[in-house]
Length: 363
Length: 255
Image 1 (cartoon, chains in turn orange, cyan):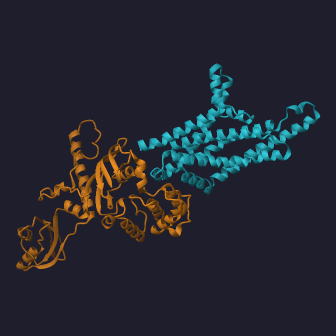
Image 2 (spheres, rainbow over the protein chains, first blue to last red):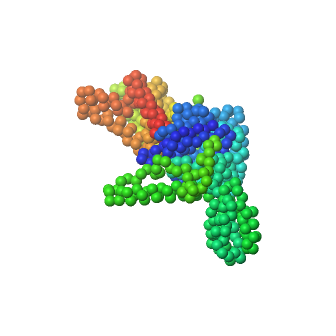
Image 3 (tube, rainbow over the protein chains, first blue to last red):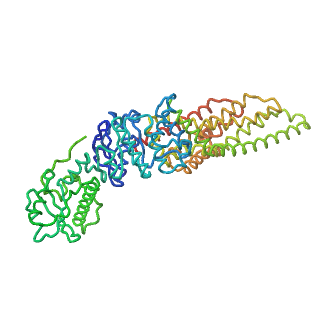
């Protein structure tokens, strides 16, 4: 439904996005994740035909966003960042304007507007001027205008920003209910939101896609090993080495001791559960098992690892560059990122691990 | 036909905010002041012409009241019209609503038409309110409606030009004050450029005279429809609207 190939956008000397490629299947909800200024909004502005790309192509519902802009715009509902609306119009009048401009027939317009207001929980504010609404209500009016006309594709830039927790839950449920019928691409920097709402994730940092896939795929890519936290009491000797001797254990890292117990972080391949072997070892040695649990890898950890890892690499790159040019007149620093940014799977920390599947093209 | 929702939205915004009422109030106050002064002066002259036989021969209420009134109104409009057009694009750019507007399935031309016609309709209401003045005259004496019709035609064309220029300048900036003053400056420039004609000679003189934006009004207020003047305003409107369309389209190219 959405195909993006090699999309780049430069604002003068600043590169907002660089060679972004991805695609979204019909009926899916895809979350666009990234720190502030990563290029999420820029990508969405291009997809919504508001702004042309510097290079590359983007197609929505089979139409090119630049060459067939009008066809694309007939099929999308767009919620820009911060929901820019006309403060001097009442909610219902505004939505009626949007419905009319999107070609909703005169006869059904009133019913459609009422329906959308109901779905977005703004019916009670319909006669209020938009400018007098709170941020949460305004955000929901913005979402309502995107939903009007029942577009095939919804492009939502931070749809839950400014909402209170209950409203966030309601709006997430609403977005989730759109799956199947509509293709949704939404951006956010709230990580649990993606896990809750989206079928797939695209992580973007500094204008490049650094990882994509479903949540579990990303976790596997970034953390190719399973990790278990073990705490024992009454142990003596080199417990670490004994643990390392257990078959399939890849590494053992001591954790700070707590309440007189020794803690270890034990890594193993994903397909081997070493917990029973660890228990057997503890039993045979006569230690007391205090705690044994798998360390879950959340999307949040993936995100931090991917984004922070990238920044660390870049920092190293810049330092090396600075050393190289030391003494020479200061040259402008390289554009962010070297030409081949390592993939999420090639973190230095994990490079000595068994080969993991390279970035899977899931969509 | 997608211009209609934009037209309706703009009308709602004009009348839903104080803009329309403030412009109407002050324009009508000033125009009414001009009318009453001219009218009183005219009645004074008429009175005196009783005493001096022959003087009344040149007295004509259309020529002596409506014509100066039209000229004065066109100059006052020069100050007022930028306030009607300055918000049309600048406000949408500033508040970011242009991002939604341009991603709705409407052509740039339809956006332009909706906005221009809305400003035009507001101006039409304003002009209709000034019909009170010839109405008052009709209460005292016989009115020649022909020259009044051409006078209003001239105001419609001149006002349409002011609005088109204002719309264009509003599309260039996101600052309403810049849009307002820019428009005012350009219109004022085209008004006073005609003054230079007095001291210029030859071809330059006729060029300067032709460019003057209010010069062309006078023919209409005398009761004449000269194609030269119609062409002047029509080309000015067409050029300004064309440039606005290009300015909107360039947004899609440049981002």
